[in-house]
Amino acid sequence: MIKVLIAEDDLMIADAAEELLVKMGYRVCGIARTVTDAIALAQTQKPDLAVIDLRLAGDGIGSDIPSSFAIRARCQPRCGVLYATGNTKRVALTDADGDACLAKPYSAADLVRSLQLVSEIVATGKASPPFPRGFRMLPSANLLGQEQAYG
Image 1 (tube, rainbow, N blue to C red):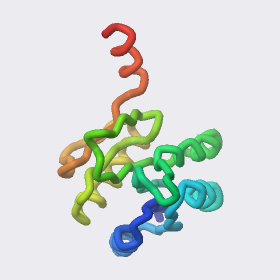
Image 2: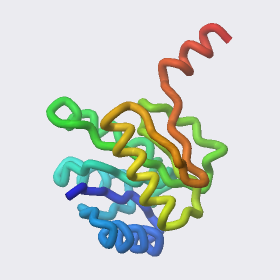
Image 3: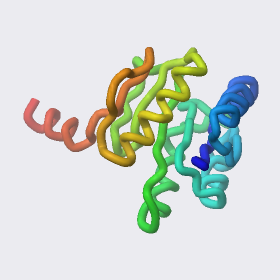
């Protein structure tokens, strides 16, 4: 069973996501409202996937969480990271931060399909259509660096 960590400070959204994911056969290994709690959960529960809001309680920034997965990546397959945020236009994340981003508000079907795509990205390095509304893969950090160097 695929284990999913949810990092979301809005408990209504987190609870709805948990309920949906459990119904779809995922195991939610925890809900965290802060960066500190999410990192602690990730270290103890070793999730396969994470759904992370960019703005968390206590002025936390969700993109600080995946760095804790780097420790785990040395031993096992890495954790797939899906950011779920209402601020996708302002997101300046790359594949060094995670795998994909899903715009809020999203439907239940969009969340499930996005997690399937993130699993595919982790396994193969790419994702196959169809893509949900508001979904985008994060660009390569290497390509962005090259564009800046040559741009």
